[in-house]
Image (cartoon, each protein chain N blue to C red):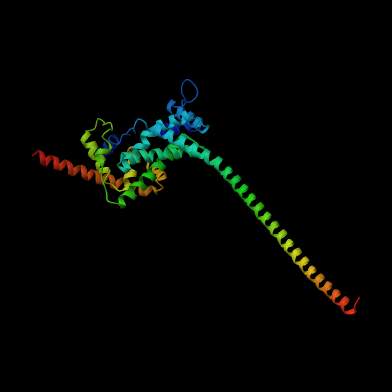
Amino acid sequence: MSLNLISLAEASPDMLPETAAGPPAIPQAAASLLNDLQAAQRGEQAAFARLVRAHQARVFSVALRLTGRREDAEELAQDAFVQLHAALPQIHSTAHLLHWLLRTISHRSIDRLRARERSPRLVQIDAMEHAAEESALDPLWSRRLRALLAQLPAAPRAVVLLRFQEDLEPTQIAAVLDMPVNTVKSHLRRSLEWLRAQQALADQAGEQHGH
Amino acid sequence: MDIERSLQAALRPVDPPADFTAGVMARIAREQQQRRRARWQMPVALAASLLVAAVGVRIVMQQREQQRIETARQQLALALEITSSQLNGLQQRLNRNTMENGI
């Protein structure tokens, strides 16, 4: 995914793949992100706006799927970008930028979710993603998966999201969430087992209903 | 279907509202304006505090000077009063002696 592209763009030149034409090719999107980051650090607001547009869907989606509320997700995602603007001088690469954003939004969303879980719980799963694009996957099963995901506690939910939405490796998830890698792996394994069990139950119920 | 592939498909990024970027940029502009204002407010507030302190010190010093002058004036008045009463006593004694000696 894009994290890999960005890492590739910022790797040392001898690590980049040689092309027949000569110097190693830097993926255009990653190079453009790097230019925008440098321009934003010089104070160009338009470049920062481009950085926001490039990352907003990912940041917003993490917040939305962790908190389950569009208004909370929008507020938290905006906070994260406003904080990022203040922290721009400390950002040294586009990979760092993405890591910083995912880390900030995950922690803030988990905090919000935990604060809300202390008060009586309102589950608003279906309402939260009516605007989401459905994939080739059965839309009902997609919706059911997201609803099941919303039943997981905050930490395993964040782990599953970062693994399957952001395509991060367990070591990267551990760094984003400040969690030991073994805990990340354990959350992943148990969450997937639980989701498979729920899927099996749903299939069984469907078959019984069919007969 | 494989649960991991299903999750990847189900968890595609969702776009925020259309005015999201504009909202972020407006908040940043607002906060920068507040920071700029705060940057000016700080020295202005400091200068105002220093001015108030300087004026206060001057007033206190003037009051003390006034008090010192008043005390000195009162002491002079008392000294003159004492001198006057002593001179009066002396005058009366001189008058008495003159009358007694028939001069």
